[in-house]
Length: 383
Picture 1 (cartoon, rainbow, N blue to C red):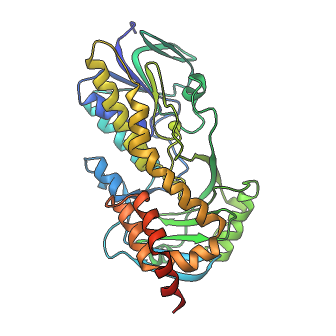
Picture 2: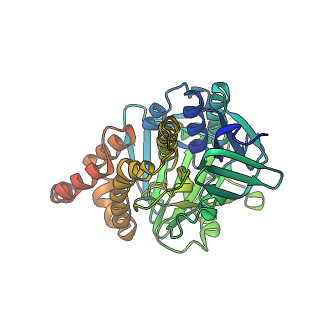
């Protein structure tokens, strides 16, 4: 490969990298995407795809939809069940390997070159461009997008995001009897209070249940053993002897910081953009991938490549709102019992959360509405 044969190298084939590659390629930019795993690759993830995410990816995602979600069930330590019927689709469950690969297929169709099983071990940044170095060869480019996840190489080698706060999640996918899976059809389940400073979830897929626990502010050492207790508490059938549990860090957003250095920028989990109340990251990966592509494309059209506007856009369009999600997270996980009984059970709060999922509202509006209406919410729940 000759120097400069690609305008942009994208590192990582998740939603952020795939979206960035697709957006750039369909604008005529020559893009190479490097993925360390063999594609399609499995990814530990609850797999919730919100309506606003589907709308952001303006192509047909239905081939990867597992279940259509119209309801949510909430419990506190497995008790006090509350079912919320949204009366319309708020999202879908998906398997991440299929979703990520679908986005990559669109990128390839637009002109992206993809090379899998290529782990980037180092990078070089110069005024003239960047070089992504793998164990096999170097890949020079005019600009580089790091979308290689929460513990990726690019951010470390670029000396960005030296201080981050991580949530930790563990998850298993269970093959359960069809009758049991049918009983959960269309409904996602959240449990508060079972795990300290976090929550548990049950997401129905087409053939399996995704069940997991995440902790946002506490210690994570006992999550794997707690997951078995969570399954027992909910009465979900499983084989303890053959239970396979995966874990991963979730980089929480809501703190403004530089996400660009020279001709390099970060997107998705590599940029620390997971939502701090639920850990949802797909929407922010896709959105940051689009912003990354727009920034790089505009820079490449100019005589002087300047990616500095990227951090400003991310901080304004994503981070500023996630700061309010961070405040809500602190309230929810420090006082889970009070929040469950007074806020989670409030129809007003339920509508506010649904509006955020739809993209009709923001965490800032949800937070301010909660402060403004707290006396009414408390009075209504005491009746």
